[in-house]
Length: 235
Image (tube, rainbow, N blue to C red):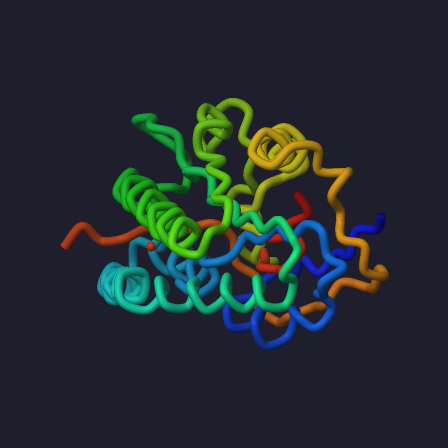
């Protein structure tokens, strides 16, 4: 059994459908996906909304992000999951959710409370859309929010990359602890022993796309990497 790692920073649901399904086949045993946040362009939202001088631009981006989430993303996810099922008809397929990115604290350096509150709402909404899409297509939804509780940004032991990752667009991606102690055990609990079901297709170098983006940031109340084998980062 071999793992085919196609995880790619910045891939949207369309990137996965158009560029990452070619290696799947009826010999594929397991497909794991993390996708959806990049469709909402959440790194750009975080970058703009973290700047107090761009309040108007932030509001516009938040409204656009919310519109995509509610009107476009459900259809995109349905297309993604049905395409994966068609390409790997015998595989167990799991799509993972996203951690709630911010802990509920009064103060957090560099992250205004309004942005953090909107971020929590955004992730909750995104995870809801992912769960519905998984259920409607017969795919396993892996909810990681509970596992990451207490380890969001602003906690004493964050499992996510903080605002230092804005420049290289890794902000809000799970760090090593998030991968090992967050995503992996949750995935195993949902689908069983991961190692026993790795894809049997030949391994190949990971594909690369141009723009990264992690879990969500905020929505106005008024805002790593998707892959047919792995998502935002290796799980």
